[in-house]
Image (cartoon, rainbow, N blue to C red):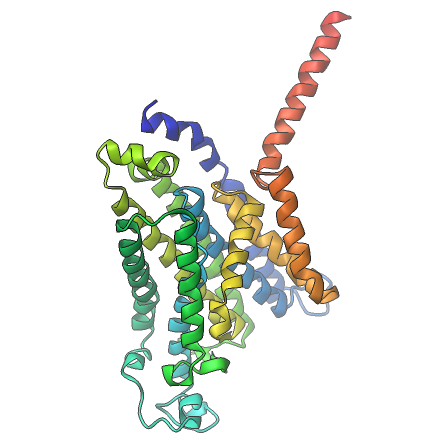
Length: 380
Protein backbone atom coordinates (compact mmCIF):
# COMPACT_ATOMS: atom_id res chain seq x y z
CA UNK A 1 0.00 0.00 0.00
CA UNK A 2 1.44 3.42 -0.95
CA UNK A 3 1.92 6.33 1.42
CA UNK A 4 -0.85 8.25 -0.31
CA UNK A 5 -3.30 5.34 0.04
CA UNK A 6 -2.60 5.29 3.77
CA UNK A 7 -3.35 8.99 3.98
CA UNK A 8 -6.64 8.73 2.05
CA UNK A 9 -7.97 6.28 4.64
CA UNK A 10 -7.68 9.02 7.27
CA UNK A 11 -8.73 11.98 5.18
CA UNK A 12 -12.33 11.74 6.45
CA UNK A 13 -11.13 12.87 9.91
CA UNK A 14 -10.09 16.21 8.43
CA UNK A 15 -13.44 17.01 6.85
CA UNK A 16 -15.49 17.71 9.98
CA UNK A 17 -13.95 21.03 11.03
CA UNK A 18 -16.58 23.34 9.56
CA UNK A 19 -19.19 22.71 12.33
CA UNK A 20 -16.55 23.76 14.88
CA UNK A 21 -15.72 26.86 12.83
CA UNK A 22 -19.39 27.86 12.69
CA UNK A 23 -19.89 27.17 16.41
CA UNK A 24 -16.80 29.16 17.47
CA UNK A 25 -17.69 32.12 15.27
CA UNK A 26 -21.34 32.11 16.38
CA UNK A 27 -20.40 31.85 20.06
CA UNK A 28 -17.95 34.74 19.85
CA UNK A 29 -20.31 36.92 17.83
CA UNK A 30 -23.30 36.33 20.12
CA UNK A 31 -21.19 37.03 23.20
CA UNK A 32 -19.90 40.26 21.64
CA UNK A 33 -23.38 41.47 20.71
CA UNK A 34 -24.78 40.42 24.08
CA UNK A 35 -22.10 42.41 25.88
CA UNK A 36 -22.14 45.61 23.81
CA UNK A 37 -25.78 45.94 22.67
CA UNK A 38 -27.91 44.41 25.41
CA UNK A 39 -28.26 46.50 28.63
CA UNK A 40 -26.94 45.06 31.89
CA UNK A 41 -30.44 45.02 33.35
CA UNK A 42 -31.52 42.40 30.78
CA UNK A 43 -31.24 38.67 31.46
CA UNK A 44 -29.70 38.27 28.00
CA UNK A 45 -26.76 40.57 28.79
CA UNK A 46 -23.36 38.86 28.56
CA UNK A 47 -21.01 40.10 31.28
CA UNK A 48 -17.46 41.25 30.62
CA UNK A 49 -16.28 38.45 32.90
CA UNK A 50 -17.94 35.89 30.60
CA UNK A 51 -16.44 37.55 27.52
CA UNK A 52 -12.97 37.32 29.09
CA UNK A 53 -13.57 33.71 30.09
CA UNK A 54 -14.61 32.76 26.54
CA UNK A 55 -11.53 34.49 25.15
CA UNK A 56 -9.35 32.46 27.51
CA UNK A 57 -11.05 29.22 26.43
CA UNK A 58 -10.41 30.03 22.76
CA UNK A 59 -6.71 30.59 23.51
CA UNK A 60 -6.60 27.19 25.20
CA UNK A 61 -8.35 25.67 22.18
CA UNK A 62 -5.63 27.07 19.90
CA UNK A 63 -3.00 25.60 22.22
CA UNK A 64 -4.71 22.19 22.11
CA UNK A 65 -4.84 22.41 18.33
CA UNK A 66 -1.06 22.97 18.26
CA UNK A 67 -0.49 19.84 20.35
CA UNK A 68 -2.90 17.79 18.24
CA UNK A 69 -1.03 18.70 15.05
CA UNK A 70 2.26 17.35 16.37
CA UNK A 71 0.90 14.47 18.47
CA UNK A 72 -2.14 13.30 16.55
CA UNK A 73 -0.64 13.49 13.06
CA UNK A 74 3.10 13.02 13.59
CA UNK A 75 3.04 10.81 16.69
CA UNK A 76 5.31 13.13 18.71
CA UNK A 77 3.94 13.33 22.26
CA UNK A 78 5.13 16.74 23.44
CA UNK A 79 4.75 17.34 27.17
CA UNK A 80 6.38 20.75 26.91
CA UNK A 81 4.18 22.91 24.72
CA UNK A 82 3.47 25.07 27.75
CA UNK A 83 6.95 26.53 27.14
CA UNK A 84 6.00 27.96 23.74
CA UNK A 85 2.65 29.20 25.08
CA UNK A 86 4.35 30.96 28.00
CA UNK A 87 7.15 32.45 25.86
CA UNK A 88 4.56 33.96 23.51
CA UNK A 89 2.76 35.29 26.58
CA UNK A 90 5.92 36.79 28.06
CA UNK A 91 6.75 38.55 24.77
CA UNK A 92 3.30 40.16 24.78
CA UNK A 93 3.59 40.87 28.52
CA UNK A 94 6.86 42.74 28.00
CA UNK A 95 5.18 44.96 25.42
CA UNK A 96 2.26 45.64 27.76
CA UNK A 97 4.64 46.45 30.64
CA UNK A 98 6.47 49.00 28.49
CA UNK A 99 3.12 50.67 27.72
CA UNK A 100 2.55 51.44 31.43
CA UNK A 101 5.31 54.09 31.44
CA UNK A 102 5.00 56.71 34.17
CA UNK A 103 1.63 55.33 35.32
CA UNK A 104 3.39 52.64 37.36
CA UNK A 105 3.61 52.68 41.15
CA UNK A 106 7.11 54.22 41.08
CA UNK A 107 6.44 56.57 38.16
CA UNK A 108 9.51 55.45 36.20
CA UNK A 109 8.94 55.97 32.46
CA UNK A 110 11.60 53.46 31.39
CA UNK A 111 11.84 50.71 34.02
CA UNK A 112 8.91 48.46 35.01
CA UNK A 113 7.94 48.60 38.68
CA UNK A 114 9.55 45.29 39.63
CA UNK A 115 12.91 46.48 38.25
CA UNK A 116 12.72 49.71 40.26
CA UNK A 117 11.84 47.67 43.36
CA UNK A 118 14.86 45.40 42.77
CA UNK A 119 17.09 48.46 42.33
CA UNK A 120 17.86 47.89 38.66
CA UNK A 121 19.56 50.93 37.11
CA UNK A 122 18.91 50.36 33.44
CA UNK A 123 16.71 48.34 31.13
CA UNK A 124 18.22 44.94 30.13
CA UNK A 125 19.19 44.64 26.47
CA UNK A 126 16.54 41.99 25.79
CA UNK A 127 13.81 44.47 26.76
CA UNK A 128 14.92 46.98 24.12
CA UNK A 129 12.43 47.40 21.28
CA UNK A 130 9.62 45.76 23.23
CA UNK A 131 7.79 49.09 23.44
CA UNK A 132 6.96 48.64 19.73
CA UNK A 133 3.95 46.46 18.95
CA UNK A 134 5.33 45.15 15.66
CA UNK A 135 8.62 44.17 17.33
CA UNK A 136 6.77 42.38 20.15
CA UNK A 137 4.71 40.43 17.59
CA UNK A 138 7.91 39.48 15.80
CA UNK A 139 9.36 38.18 19.07
CA UNK A 140 6.14 36.22 19.76
CA UNK A 141 6.93 34.21 16.64
CA UNK A 142 10.74 34.23 16.51
CA UNK A 143 11.63 33.27 20.10
CA UNK A 144 9.35 30.21 20.48
CA UNK A 145 9.87 29.26 16.82
CA UNK A 146 13.65 29.49 17.18
CA UNK A 147 13.62 27.43 20.37
CA UNK A 148 11.41 24.79 18.71
CA UNK A 149 13.75 24.66 15.71
CA UNK A 150 16.84 24.25 17.89
CA UNK A 151 15.24 21.63 20.14
CA UNK A 152 13.67 19.74 17.24
CA UNK A 153 16.83 19.84 15.12
CA UNK A 154 18.94 18.41 17.94
CA UNK A 155 16.37 15.83 19.06
CA UNK A 156 15.13 14.57 15.69
CA UNK A 157 18.58 14.43 14.09
CA UNK A 158 19.64 12.28 17.05
CA UNK A 159 16.53 10.15 16.38
CA UNK A 160 15.18 10.59 19.89
CA UNK A 161 11.61 9.30 19.84
CA UNK A 162 8.83 7.96 22.03
CA UNK A 163 8.91 8.29 25.77
CA UNK A 164 12.47 9.65 25.74
CA UNK A 165 11.38 12.65 23.66
CA UNK A 166 8.37 13.21 25.94
CA UNK A 167 10.66 13.24 29.00
CA UNK A 168 12.98 15.73 27.29
CA UNK A 169 10.10 18.11 26.52
CA UNK A 170 8.90 17.81 30.10
CA UNK A 171 12.42 18.58 31.37
CA UNK A 172 12.53 21.59 29.04
CA UNK A 173 9.40 23.16 30.52
CA UNK A 174 10.60 22.45 34.07
CA UNK A 175 13.96 24.12 33.36
CA UNK A 176 12.22 27.21 31.98
CA UNK A 177 9.93 27.39 35.00
CA UNK A 178 12.87 27.34 37.43
CA UNK A 179 14.75 29.95 35.37
CA UNK A 180 11.84 32.39 35.18
CA UNK A 181 11.30 32.15 38.94
CA UNK A 182 14.68 33.85 39.45
CA UNK A 183 14.48 37.62 39.95
CA UNK A 184 17.80 38.21 38.20
CA UNK A 185 16.34 36.92 34.93
CA UNK A 186 14.51 40.24 34.57
CA UNK A 187 11.00 38.87 34.04
CA UNK A 188 9.41 39.71 37.38
CA UNK A 189 10.40 36.50 39.17
CA UNK A 190 7.64 34.77 41.11
CA UNK A 191 5.09 37.55 40.48
CA UNK A 192 5.67 37.71 36.74
CA UNK A 193 4.32 40.59 34.66
CA UNK A 194 1.00 42.22 35.52
CA UNK A 195 -0.84 45.52 36.12
CA UNK A 196 -1.24 46.09 32.37
CA UNK A 197 -2.99 49.33 31.41
CA UNK A 198 -3.61 49.48 27.67
CA UNK A 199 -2.75 48.01 24.31
CA UNK A 200 -2.21 50.15 21.18
CA UNK A 201 -3.72 53.02 23.16
CA UNK A 202 -6.92 51.16 24.06
CA UNK A 203 -7.69 50.47 27.72
CA UNK A 204 -7.63 46.77 28.57
CA UNK A 205 -10.43 47.36 31.09
CA UNK A 206 -12.85 48.68 28.47
CA UNK A 207 -15.65 46.37 27.31
CA UNK A 208 -14.96 47.13 23.65
CA UNK A 209 -11.30 46.07 24.03
CA UNK A 210 -12.35 42.82 25.69
CA UNK A 211 -14.83 42.11 22.90
CA UNK A 212 -12.25 42.85 20.20
CA UNK A 213 -9.78 40.47 21.87
CA UNK A 214 -12.47 37.77 22.03
CA UNK A 215 -13.31 38.17 18.33
CA UNK A 216 -9.61 38.24 17.44
CA UNK A 217 -9.11 35.00 19.39
CA UNK A 218 -11.99 33.39 17.49
CA UNK A 219 -10.67 34.54 14.11
CA UNK A 220 -7.11 33.38 14.78
CA UNK A 221 -8.37 30.03 16.09
CA UNK A 222 -10.31 29.53 12.85
CA UNK A 223 -7.26 30.58 10.79
CA UNK A 224 -5.09 28.10 12.74
CA UNK A 225 -7.69 25.37 12.22
CA UNK A 226 -7.87 25.95 8.48
CA UNK A 227 -4.12 26.36 8.02
CA UNK A 228 -3.50 23.13 9.95
CA UNK A 229 -6.07 21.37 7.80
CA UNK A 230 -4.45 22.70 4.63
CA UNK A 231 -0.98 21.59 5.77
CA UNK A 232 -2.16 18.10 6.65
CA UNK A 233 -4.00 17.74 3.35
CA UNK A 234 -0.95 18.79 1.36
CA UNK A 235 1.85 16.54 0.15
CA UNK A 236 3.80 17.62 3.24
CA UNK A 237 0.97 16.37 5.46
CA UNK A 238 0.81 13.05 3.64
CA UNK A 239 4.47 12.46 4.40
CA UNK A 240 3.94 13.50 8.03
CA UNK A 241 1.21 10.90 8.50
CA UNK A 242 3.36 8.31 6.76
CA UNK A 243 6.18 9.10 9.21
CA UNK A 244 3.79 8.58 12.10
CA UNK A 245 2.66 5.21 10.78
CA UNK A 246 6.08 3.95 9.74
CA UNK A 247 9.05 6.28 9.99
CA UNK A 248 11.59 3.62 9.02
CA UNK A 249 9.62 2.85 5.87
CA UNK A 250 9.30 6.54 4.96
CA UNK A 251 13.05 6.97 5.45
CA UNK A 252 13.71 3.89 3.35
CA UNK A 253 11.64 5.45 0.52
CA UNK A 254 13.99 8.45 0.50
CA UNK A 255 12.25 11.01 2.72
CA UNK A 256 14.43 12.95 5.16
CA UNK A 257 11.98 12.49 7.99
CA UNK A 258 13.89 14.70 10.44
CA UNK A 259 13.25 17.80 8.30
CA UNK A 260 9.51 17.14 8.12
CA UNK A 261 9.30 16.63 11.88
CA UNK A 262 11.33 19.74 12.67
CA UNK A 263 9.21 22.04 10.51
CA UNK A 264 5.93 20.67 11.85
CA UNK A 265 7.28 21.08 15.39
CA UNK A 266 8.15 24.72 14.64
CA UNK A 267 4.69 25.36 13.13
CA UNK A 268 3.05 23.81 16.19
CA UNK A 269 5.20 25.92 18.55
CA UNK A 270 4.30 29.15 16.72
CA UNK A 271 0.57 28.39 16.96
CA UNK A 272 1.01 27.77 20.71
CA UNK A 273 2.96 31.02 21.09
CA UNK A 274 0.29 33.07 19.31
CA UNK A 275 -2.27 31.56 21.68
CA UNK A 276 -0.12 32.68 24.62
CA UNK A 277 0.19 36.21 23.21
CA UNK A 278 -3.61 36.46 22.95
CA UNK A 279 -4.08 34.96 26.41
CA UNK A 280 -2.03 37.52 28.37
CA UNK A 281 -3.94 40.77 27.60
CA UNK A 282 -7.21 38.96 28.37
CA UNK A 283 -6.27 37.47 31.74
CA UNK A 284 -4.00 40.37 32.72
CA UNK A 285 -1.00 38.41 34.01
CA UNK A 286 1.82 36.06 32.97
CA UNK A 287 4.06 34.34 35.52
CA UNK A 288 6.35 31.29 35.73
CA UNK A 289 3.38 29.13 36.74
CA UNK A 290 2.49 28.95 33.03
CA UNK A 291 5.66 26.85 32.53
CA UNK A 292 4.54 24.30 35.13
CA UNK A 293 4.86 20.72 33.77
CA UNK A 294 1.31 19.89 34.88
CA UNK A 295 -0.04 22.52 32.46
CA UNK A 296 1.54 20.74 29.49
CA UNK A 297 0.13 17.41 30.69
CA UNK A 298 -3.35 18.94 30.96
CA UNK A 299 -3.14 20.08 27.33
CA UNK A 300 -2.51 16.48 26.24
CA UNK A 301 -5.56 15.39 28.27
CA UNK A 302 -7.75 18.00 26.51
CA UNK A 303 -6.68 16.57 23.15
CA UNK A 304 -7.19 12.96 24.24
CA UNK A 305 -10.67 13.69 25.58
CA UNK A 306 -11.71 15.61 22.47
CA UNK A 307 -10.21 13.16 20.02
CA UNK A 308 -6.56 12.86 19.05
CA UNK A 309 -5.75 13.33 15.38
CA UNK A 310 -8.99 15.07 14.44
CA UNK A 311 -8.20 18.82 14.81
CA UNK A 312 -11.84 19.57 15.63
CA UNK A 313 -11.66 17.18 18.58
CA UNK A 314 -8.77 19.10 20.12
CA UNK A 315 -10.79 22.33 19.99
CA UNK A 316 -13.89 20.67 21.44
CA UNK A 317 -11.89 18.94 24.19
CA UNK A 318 -10.18 22.17 25.28
CA UNK A 319 -13.45 24.12 25.38
CA UNK A 320 -15.44 21.47 27.26
CA UNK A 321 -12.77 20.52 29.79
CA UNK A 322 -11.96 24.13 30.67
CA UNK A 323 -15.63 25.00 31.00
CA UNK A 324 -16.04 21.99 33.31
CA UNK A 325 -12.96 23.11 35.25
CA UNK A 326 -14.47 26.55 35.81
CA UNK A 327 -17.72 25.08 37.11
CA UNK A 328 -16.18 22.23 39.08
CA UNK A 329 -13.49 24.28 40.84
CA UNK A 330 -16.14 26.74 42.01
CA UNK A 331 -17.87 23.91 43.89
CA UNK A 332 -15.10 21.43 44.80
CA UNK A 333 -11.71 22.94 43.95
CA UNK A 334 -9.70 20.26 45.73
CA UNK A 335 -11.41 17.45 43.78
CA UNK A 336 -10.86 18.82 40.27
CA UNK A 337 -7.64 16.93 39.49
CA UNK A 338 -9.25 13.65 40.59
CA UNK A 339 -12.26 14.38 38.36
CA UNK A 340 -10.01 15.21 35.42
CA UNK A 341 -7.97 12.05 35.93
CA UNK A 342 -11.14 9.95 36.17
CA UNK A 343 -12.53 11.51 33.01
CA UNK A 344 -9.28 10.81 31.18
CA UNK A 345 -9.32 7.16 32.26
CA UNK A 346 -12.97 6.72 31.25
CA UNK A 347 -12.42 8.28 27.84
CA UNK A 348 -9.31 6.18 27.26
CA UNK A 349 -11.14 2.96 28.16
CA UNK A 350 -14.50 3.53 26.49
CA UNK A 351 -13.86 6.25 23.90
CA UNK A 352 -10.38 5.69 22.46
CA UNK A 353 -11.23 8.15 19.65
CA UNK A 354 -12.42 10.79 22.12
CA UNK A 355 -15.70 12.65 22.15
CA UNK A 356 -15.52 13.12 18.39
CA UNK A 357 -15.63 9.32 18.08
CA UNK A 358 -19.13 9.37 19.61
CA UNK A 359 -20.63 10.61 16.32
CA UNK A 360 -19.29 7.61 14.38
CA UNK A 361 -20.60 5.29 17.11
CA UNK A 362 -24.05 6.86 16.87
CA UNK A 363 -24.01 6.52 13.07
CA UNK A 364 -23.04 2.84 13.29
CA UNK A 365 -25.77 2.18 15.85
CA UNK A 366 -28.37 3.99 13.72
CA UNK A 367 -27.25 2.01 10.65
CA UNK A 368 -27.58 -1.29 12.51
CA UNK A 369 -31.04 -0.39 13.80
CA UNK A 370 -32.09 0.65 10.31
CA UNK A 371 -30.81 -2.62 8.83
CA UNK A 372 -32.56 -4.62 11.56
CA UNK A 373 -35.88 -2.80 10.92
CA UNK A 374 -35.59 -3.36 7.17
CA UNK A 375 -34.94 -7.08 7.78
CA UNK A 376 -37.98 -7.35 10.05
CA UNK A 377 -40.24 -5.72 7.45
CA UNK A 378 -38.98 -7.97 4.62
CA UNK A 379 -39.60 -11.11 6.75
CA UNK A 380 -43.15 -10.00 7.59
